[in-house]
Length: 357
Image 1 (cartoon, rainbow, N blue to C red):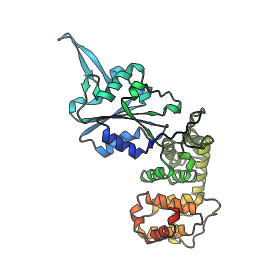
Image 2 (cartoon, one colour):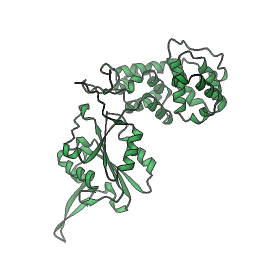
Image 3 (cartoon, rainbow, N blue to C red):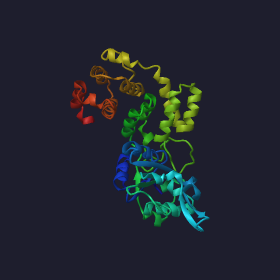
Image 4 (cartoon, rainbow, N blue to C red):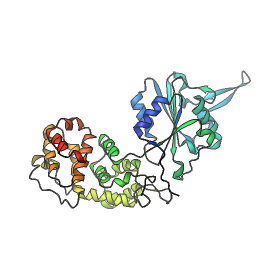
């Protein structure tokens, strides 16, 4: 049976907004494919909410035992059991908590009741969390086939949100802001199927992505693309690079990315393009790979309106409308967007090519 679904999905930004808006009263359970950035949401929230009012607590659901969370301990003086909460929660400092239970649908049955109380009652066992604390959880889609099962009585206590994979354009904007190398960005721009989902239509033959119906250890995901960046930047031999990338992205993704590694030394330097945008030799336009690589190199290099003016003149010479469109989209999603919005050459291109935007 097909995995394609019309179930509504939220982007990562929408998911964070949902958690911040309702997370004090409703536990948001985030489901998505492996490697789509669920766990990183806790770090995003820490950056956005700050640590003055909040503690940010990560719980690895499947690997925590009862004594890691809380326990009743005998008090020999009173001859009674007293409830002790693990120092992980820092309940004594009065700060509100933002708690993420990761891989929540894989927790052992013995531990499910304590997490269920956290979801429903905002307590750690019998100890209440400070007023205004946020609890959310993450796991893989149940259709991913990696052991994630959600009992109905637990599901009814939560708001279950399916988070979408980022689109190619969304991911490229993130990658630019986070210093991902030109090689990795150009590869994704060249092969946008790398960021498709097995739940999308016509993806059963997609050689890059996670396919729950097939046994696979390595595949392309936002997470594995991030890891591949460290490999590319290490500047290792071709054999080592290919071997490491294959174990990170799968063979097809690795071979496509190493082709860009080999290409990098052959393209015209961006300094030369900016110096002579109207006369510098144009790469063979039957192969858009060099042009994509040059676009992402330019994004990293451009610092002024003059630089942008010059490179836009080069872009205007590119015959491929697709490559020109990629340039415009990634430019406006990058840290250079402010420059672009007031640049006469970019504005002129946008007016003349509004049908491509």
